[in-house]
Image (cartoon, rainbow, N blue to C red; front, top):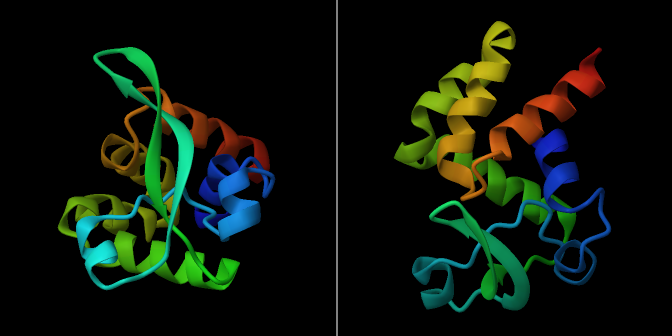
Length: 126
């Protein structure tokens, strides 16, 4: 799942956020990240708001390596309460698609986000 999600989020390693700042997952810089003085990157993106795409700039977490990005993703998915149900499903190989759908409810504002990840998962695992 992290490989699929990182491929989607980073446009297979070709997004500016990935290439310049090693952020493979589009993880935003939260107040707690910024308060610790961790590096950030202001980048163009889009969010879905009330069913419409809105282009904007957002502050994202900047990493020193892809490994750091993967480790942070792992921390987020395994420790934040909002991903608890998704994480439990993702650990069960027979419920991965259900886990991706659950994660998609929280991870992104794109209403088609989970569908996109599931389609990529099915493509890769067939």
